[in-house]
Image 1 (tube, one colour):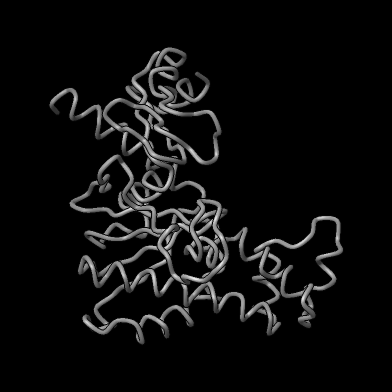
Image 2 (image 1 turned 135 degrees about the horizontal axis):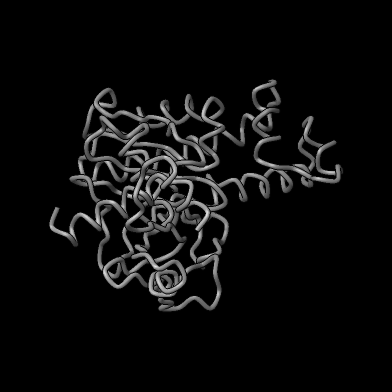
Length: 274
C-alpha cells in the first residue's frame, strides 16, 4: 500500500496492478498454469490471491511478455511495429508482439524460443531436450561452459576467477571478452551465433523484420552483436539481412514493471469499455 500512497501523492489514481511471472500464464483467468522457477505452482490462482490482499484487480502475465510490453510502450520497441523479443538471462525467454499484443498461442505456450533446438546433439537442457537455445545463449550456461572449458585445459584469464569466493559470472566473462581474452570472446561468439540461428528461423517462418534483445545478457551486447550480425547475414537466405532490425532493449530492470503497468492499464480500459 506504500506504493499506492506514493502514487496518490503524485496525483495518480491506482485502479489495477499488473504482475509478471515466469511460466505459462492463463491471462483471462489470471492463473499461473505452471512455472519452472516456482515448483508447486500448478494452476495457481495468483491474480485472485493478490487481488484479495491488495484490494485491486490484479492481472498476471508471463515475465518476458511484461518486459516486451514495457519496451513496446516506452523503450526500444516503440517504433518497431510487430517484433520478436528475446530475453537471455538465467534462461532464454521470448515473446512475439503482434498488433500491440503478446501472441499467446495454444495453451499460452507461445514465445518459448529458449527451447528451440539449435544444436541437435548438444547439451541436455533442463527441459529434457538437447541443444536448446537456452543451453547456448543464457547466462547460466555461459558460466557452466566457461568452467567446463577451463577444466578441459583452456587457457584464460578467467582461471583466477573460478577460484575466487564469488566464482565466475556472466558479467566477469563479458569484461574478460572486452579486455581481449580469447576464450571469453569465443564464448560470446557462441552466444551471438546461436541467437542468430534462432532469429533466422523465426524470420523465415513469420516474415517478422524486427528483433529486440532484452534480459540480463543484453548487457553483454558489445561482446555478441558482431558475431550475431555476421551469422544472421549467412543464415538469412529468403529475406535481405539489411531488412532485419536487431536492437537492444532500453529500459533495463524497469521494463517488466513498466510492462505490468501497461498491461493493467490496458485490461482495465477493456473492462470498463474506455
